[in-house]
Amino acid sequence: MNDFANEHYRRLLDALPCYVTLQDRELNILWCNESYQRDFGLPYGKTCFELYGTDKAKCSDCPVEKTFLDGLIHSREMTVKTKDDHRTNMMVYSSPVRDDNGKIISVLETAVNVTSVKDMQKQLILLGQTVAGMAHSIKNIMMGLEGGIYVVNKGIEDKSQDEIKEGWEMVLLNFDKISHIVKDILYCSKDREPNLQEIRPNDVVREVYKLFKSMAGSYAIEIRLDLDGNVRDAVIDPAGLHTVLSNLVTNAMDACKIDLWKDEHLVEVRTRKGKNGSTIIEVADNGIGIGKDLKAHVFEDFFSSKGDKGTGLGLMVTQKILREHGGKITFRSRPGRGTTFVATFPRKELPNGAGQ
Amino acid sequence: MSKKILVVDDEDHVVKYLTIFLQDCGYETCSASNGEEATEVLHREKPDLVTLDLQMPNETGTRFYRNMTKDKEFKDVPVIVISGIPGRHLAVSKPVAVFEKPVDRNALLDAIKKTIGE
Ligand SMILES: Nc1ncnc2c1ncn2[C@@H]1O[C@H](COP(=O)(O)OP(=O)(O)O)[C@@H](O)[C@H]1O
Ligand SMILES: [Mg+2]
Image (cartoon, rainbow over all chains, first blue to last red; front, side, top):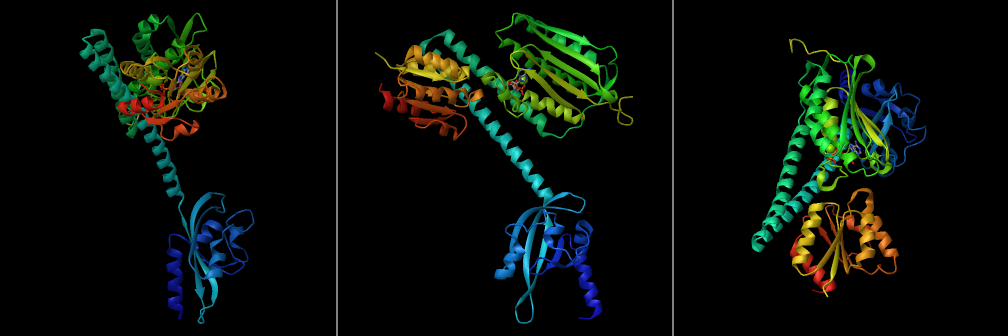
């Protein structure tokens, strides 16, 4: 081959958006393209598995060795480490290079980075789980609707106002529930920017307090506020904060309602300043608490321990709102004693030109 | 004397629906909304058949079933599994029948009739 062609082919191989190496039977690297050298270092005198950082041992099921044996093309998915220690998912293909007599003299390995595909796969699995949760939840609601319709029909047959009323209530409740679910799912399915404004978080807390005070009273639950006056201006989406508070207070009240062991039930909403100018909002209750077996599930979509009274979406929406703000939500709980949810909103600046 | 059926489900609506329906079909009913309660009702009411939802929180449905099969007096009481999660009945070794929510009530009635009669 003349020099021009040689140089030209080398450039072509260097330009390929994947890692190309030529290997001998001992998996020594005879040649590599530029991308490979950039991400795995100078290969000469080293073996493939040394450079891939797979613990200095040959990979099980090595496609290159297989190709040396049977002369066919092989592929395998594997996780390797780049020279800066980044774990990378690779799809590796091996194909034989033959001399004029057809004897395999080396194997060409082509490795494609599939890390982003893997990540996508993980997200799809999560999505699948969400859809399964939703299907389950909707099945239960359908059964509730069917039950309601059955009882209404029976009431009509029996000319019983009470039965009609009872059945109709079942229908309404389940209708209500499905409307809520649809609203929450739509909320979470969109990537939305929070509507950031300069607000006084304590004011929003007081609004939510007013909304829940009398309902709490009817269950003999006291709602108490412990607001830090230093929490003044914060840049938060007010509607988002309102939703977060409503969800947490509702859950806290639910936890108190089903707790039969304490004489007095209390839900306390606290605000304070956190590190780096963040705003921290806590909702504490002395309800039933969250047991070990439930702990891992409370943030799961559609997870609810409340049977037909819960949708399991309140915390999903809450988490989404905090994520949109770059914040987080955590909880601590003692079974039988109570639970405290802690929402942290980081300090933010208003986006340029907005709000003024 | 009419036969008695225990309905175990943590959803009030499902309990209401199934008990009203089964009463209409001439059965006596009792119900429980969690595993512990179900064990209690089982001993008190001695039902002829149990319908069981296995996806109640804390796996209490599964635990109830396990306890029941270990109890000499109740181990042969037939169980019909009603669940929103396909495949969940695998936790029950020998259910008489398995139904997915929402239940086809006539098929359910058939299965009950076949097992314990009218
Ligand atoms: N304050 C709390 N105390 C005890 N359990 C809680 C509390 N908040 C949430 N949980 C648990 O987390 C689950 C999920 O909550 P959520 O997403 O709001 O759904 P839902 O309220 O509809 O059940 C609840 O069913 C409950 O088991
Ligand atoms: Mg909730």
